[in-house]
Amino acid sequence: MLQSMGQRRVTGSDEDPRVAELRTAVSRLRRELAAHPVEFADRGIAEDELAALAAMADGGTPEIPRLRRSLLLVAGAIGSVSALAPGLAGVRGAVETFGETGGR
Image (tube, rainbow, N blue to C red; front, side, top):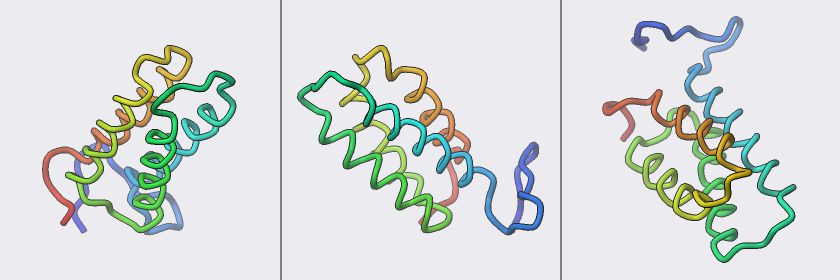
């Protein structure tokens, strides 16, 4: 498998570092969302899509269109919750590492 410049394999592992970054970012945002005390209308959507993102990361290299769709749904659901903005930015950054090609 070819690697983009700046990407490296985790020592002793064949896991794509982008997938590891995605898994970490999604896990962090899921914890932050679970700890967030305020209910909001689209919380369930955010939780469902974060679970989908976690499943994609656990399954190996995810499909980019599906990643982007989930990111848009999560952003739309929690984008106005300022306390969750740093975690959302982390997930967005992790999704962006997959670029425009790959998947499917």
